[in-house]
Length: 258
Image 1: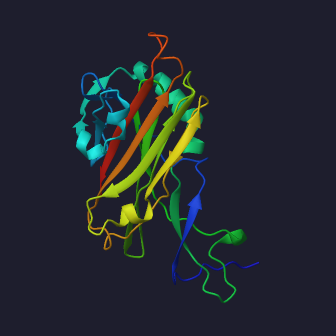
Image 2 (image 1 turned 90 degrees about the vertical axis):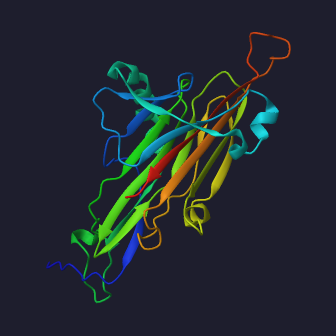
């Protein structure tokens, strides 16, 4: 049977499951005590990527304060031996299929005359290489942001979204917050990605936002801020001084397009 490729009349956005990944993740370990973002020796940092952590004094009052009032601390990139990342890669490889933000891929749609976009009724994916950027914390929790640039038929899209993951632990409950904002006005990333809050138990879990793909005309050279926080709570800290009350991680992955 003859199969024709249709003319590109419009584009469809299709959510792609993350079982097959376009590229290896970029992982930075947050060394909060020294203010560094550790990357494997010899690694090239993706263009337009920065990391921040949020100040926190360890009190409920401070956790409830607005993030802007607590201040973001920029992390300085520094190299570390590849062996230091073995555990981080193991945790991420085991969880990324569920946690990693979905990409959207734009496809040529049939023109309605009975012809198909590709063989076997499969739509044809636009070639692209998404980047997933991880900020990893000491207990195995992390923040992951998506940076995905796609071009087709003279149009370019700047895709972003994010997720926050809390590793299982001895805490009894926890709260995860995830949000995406940008330097655009109006802020279309904040409008369409938005924010999310999730409650977890000791088995951990994740919380994320949708991915959004404005065109380069809608979002000229945007800077996107993927911000996440994890608050873990323990029983017994009032009677056992060796038991923690709270553990808090908060950070931002900043991505500038293109």
